[in-house]
Image 1 (cartoon, one colour):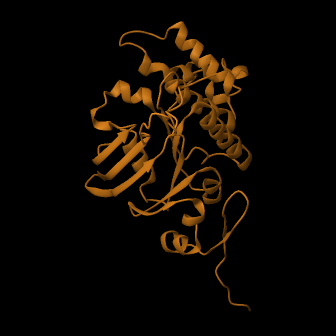
Image 2 (cartoon, helix red, strand yellow):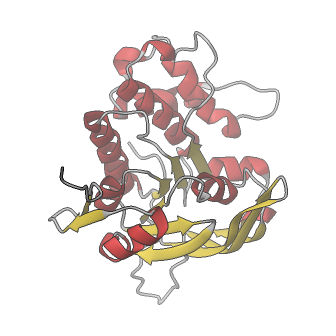
Image 3 (cartoon, one colour):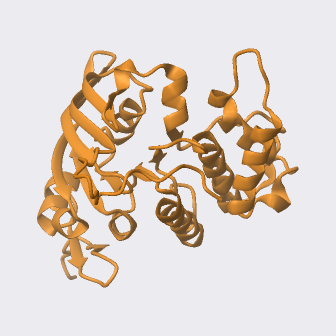
Length: 283
């Protein structure tokens, strides 16, 4: 199943320039007069997975929502070269899907009906979903092993099953869209380690197979470093570090910005961050 046409290949026999998937320039967000995100700039290449990390209150979710066009901001964000501010809302919703931490789910809604909500940007005003929209939703459900649950109420699913359904809605939203961006706000925050792995492996597989570009926020540092191509460390609303996990997950940076005593252990899958208890007086 193809959800979106892959972005242009980096190699081109005609010498065509590769367009950056996402470009954020001096993004600044104020909420209620308070400065939450302060002149943050970064780029994300097509097919890349960038994860934003940082202590509580650093502005991670706010930055993600600004990039999604859900919050007013100063600065500029470009999606495959197109200025975010110039894109019509419907076009924006077709190209960027956001998975929030705690989505509002209407009581009693079935899994299939919830996934179909992702097709809303593709439906004309005053219209309703077509058979094509239903087929897209069913293909996504099949791809995410949700077919046994299509008639079940979303509230009756386990945590891992529900998170797959939430992801399915986002993928149904992006289906048929070229140059798509998937934004994940703490996608594993309410899941145990097994379901965390299940969801992240699924995202990584879809990224490889469907040409998706992914930007996420995450608290679990070791897991973030294992799955993301690069990490962006946000502290007090400002960019503190940006690069591969080995360059960002260091004892010095984590001590400075998390005020944490940790040991960072190199492993085949990336740095493993182990908290250390404070020294204690022996009695």
